Image 1: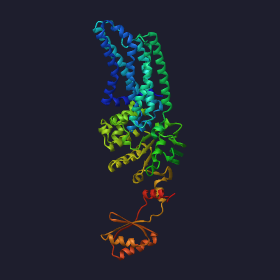
Image 2: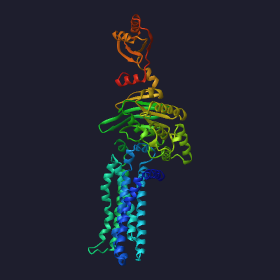
Image 3: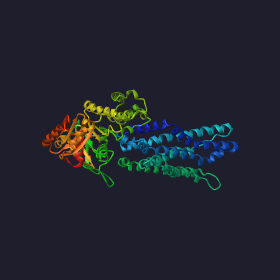
Length: 251
Length: 313
């Protein structure tokens, strides 16, 4: 298998997608929802309770920060929904399938074309949130805490990409089975709802009194990572196993 | 040596048998035409040969590689122009970018790729338009660009599905000339699907006629035409009094059909060796001045119609 050929497919897809402004800015806008919500929360806490801001933020971070990961799944689903069915609608699927690309090379290329921008948006969201939080806390003269904090960063940088990988794999599988792009988009909505569930797991770490047990946070983070990894491996294996040129062309 | 060998190839879509146990062999360096009406199984055959579809039964070898066992190798040595090829380009990519992308996918070394793209685009009179998005090119130019894409990696076998469909006559003629010159220049094997009989007659040295998924006849184009029965069709051109001539021809009981075509009358005559003299005498006795009384040469269209109706085996 040639990674170079997969990268060619990914680069071509990305280049074409980025030529369309409403796609480019639409994705940035969706991904911005997570950081904007977090930054507004930080700002609200900083303005209403400046002396307790750092402590409050540190406590609620494991509940708030996964929001960035949840939102980052949406652009991944939108880009990957278009992967194969988009080629079919543009009538470019047949020439692409006639090249010496193997099934794995083609699917990996399609996976990377959705995974790379989604990871870029995820990392960008984390960076912007961190910088804005530090700036706000410095501005009010508070102790500096990281938002996302260390445990959330672990979750976002490990389970985040893994769940995006799983999401993209399942959307590529769906994209190869449906006849029209809009069908893939409709399916992506329901799929996103399922795939965000593991990212909500850290919420179990808050007790009835509103306190967060950090041991439970780390435990739930590892469980989330485990579920994401199992999902990613299973969906990728399914996408490869169920890929059928014959059926795609016969549709 | 045969570049394409098809043996018992069958493709079914649910209850429909699109290709039904076909047998074909395409000699190296030839231009082979697969003729047939819409829905006959022509496109399915090309899709089977380029590994887009998997056969239900039978085998096919392209350049010595089996389409089921070695699909990647088959794709490496084939160039494909899909049906409605002009619609199969990336519309937002420029003509150059389209070729560059596919050139890299076919593994053409970067140091060779630019030269090949320039050579092909220049050959197809598209070099001046290389930076234009494919979607902004005319239908004819897009078709030529799609042909460039199929030729870029210098495949041994070219599989072209209706290469001139949707083109105006001038553009179609240009594409035909290109195929002929490419066949001569690069000595590649062409397998062309078409329902355009005159086009196939002009380009292909060998043909097969397919209908309802079955090959009805195949062989050398000229040899097949000669297998037709001696023609009973005659073209008669007269001066001025065409109406009189027409009524005389129609009145003869050995004339089985009469047709008017521009300044000529086309008549089918039973037992022409004996009856042509009778018809000529009748026309001359009524003062009809005859310019031409000639046997119509059997065309590929005659062959095609005879085969489809079951006349020639």
